[in-house]
Image (tube, rainbow, N blue to C red; front, side, top):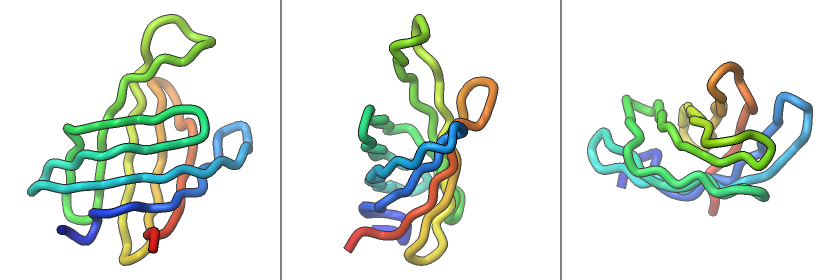
Length: 104
């Protein structure tokens, strides 16, 4: 198990200022990262994320009810000890900033 593996409790602030909570489960195998970002309204599962040091990045295709088709979200996080921070970006703009800590 690497230093980024495990469950993380996140606080998410959307571009509209809304506060949300989520759980991020991470598992690494070398430089490959898999897991799930589990929020109040959706779950983003992934299995082809990449890790470089303590930086993690993955893309997930999601369906958003108000938009036709799927949208690709890019999630980028950095782990520093027992804290984590990052962003969730849409095709054209940053959608949310995230920060959190390792779940006990």
